[in-house]
Length: 189
Image 1 (cartoon, rainbow, N blue to C red):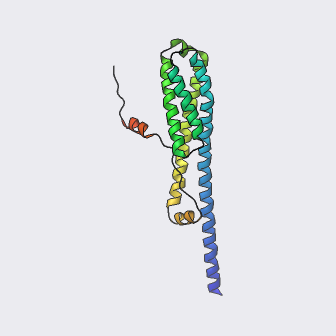
Image 2: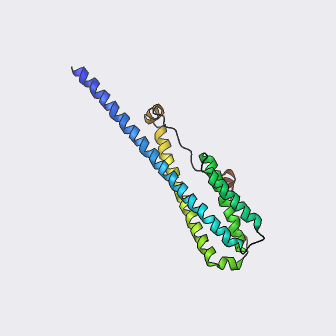
Image 3: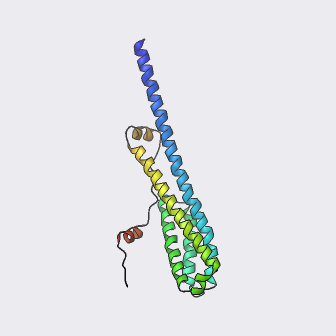
């Protein structure tokens, strides 16, 4: 009879451990999904601001047509990448960020545009959105780190694999931007 109670206690302990592990993996996966959703919301906000920004710039920079076209193409690519995998989404987002930088560089050439209240407001909103996107990326990557770590440690790795949990990809910068980040900025006077 005592052996039966010991076996029953071991089975209950294993079931509780399995239940707790499963629930912790689900919680971490949901946190990663929520953080990815935050990125998507902020990227959508940025995509909604871009047409207004382009319209404002068009009136001042008529001969800067190629820059405006590149921003429009990058915006379309970013919208389409939402349906793809994480690496394609990150690549399209990085391309959009770089084309927006060129748009703001054009704006520097037009003092009247820089003083335009609509442009200033849109530029401020876009900068705020960019900051929120960066914060959302950091939160997502932090949650993915927690989730992936949990999936790789013992005994969760065994249970996670049995239950079909897969590691998540990080939201990463493009290879070209990684090289730019590692290079020291050049200061000239």
